[in-house]
Image (cartoon, rainbow, N blue to C red; front, side, top):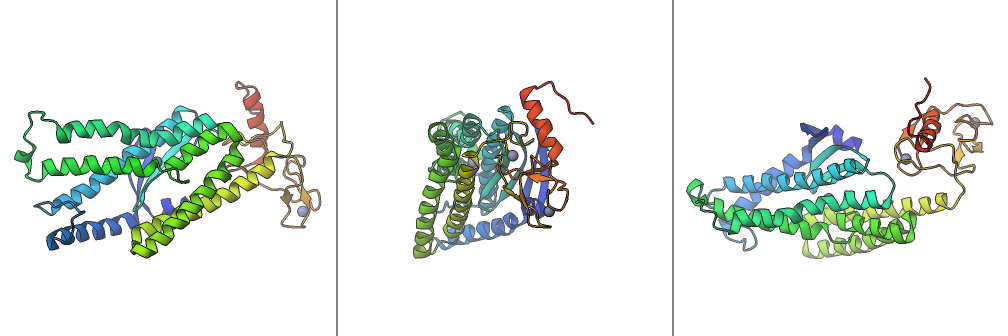
Length: 323
Ligand SMILES: [Zn+2]
Ligand SMILES: [Zn+2]
Ligand SMILES: [Zn+2]
């Protein structure tokens, strides 16, 4: 995610959330707008909207990402509401990414995933009223293309809704399913199930994209496949970790995960395996002190004393760490 923010243009900050535009969005946008306008001119585009003035292709493209942005704000604000953190949204050619870290509870995770598509669901009637009902406003007086544009935007939002709720992890539908299964069979097993589904459907979509020669679909299906693959490996590791006894005196300051007991840590200096929470991040073999300890659950890194402080805070919310 740092690579995305590195190559991204900061747009604005709203509700404490920074919105960035990835550089590749600009390239793809120019290409997409040009090619839709050309295809419409050549009249070989029964699927593409046809506007009289070609600037409407640009307006439509920007409006599409306006809807995507509202969707991402849905995720981010829902995550905040349940006590998680969310401070960044990046728009890129395949849509948007809200960097959300909901608390590690199925309900919080479920609500964060659901809130994005919920925005599109609410927009269906709202945009529909503007596009299809006679509100006594003559849209065509503003521009002859405007009434048609409003109908196209309604359709795009509906498409985004249906696309996102497909139960293919890591799409929202897959994450919603992950949250539901988490209640029933536990976090690690649920993640493995939805990741296998994601890999299967992502792989099938990759084959399809080669058959029909769709670049957009091949990039998207590769993204789904590899993210699901990472999810599967994470689920498998989590299942191993969760079956071990845990440290009750330490917790991840970011996600609250209690680390497993056991010699899971390896010293890169002398090769000793040790339990870093028993040894306070100091290798018993050579005495090397590890400045930060990564969370096996959320991968955030914190100094070891923050792990012990976090566990005390979870037990007693009024606890404040000593300097
Ligand atoms: Zn989403
Ligand atoms: Zn060592
Ligand atoms: Zn964590």
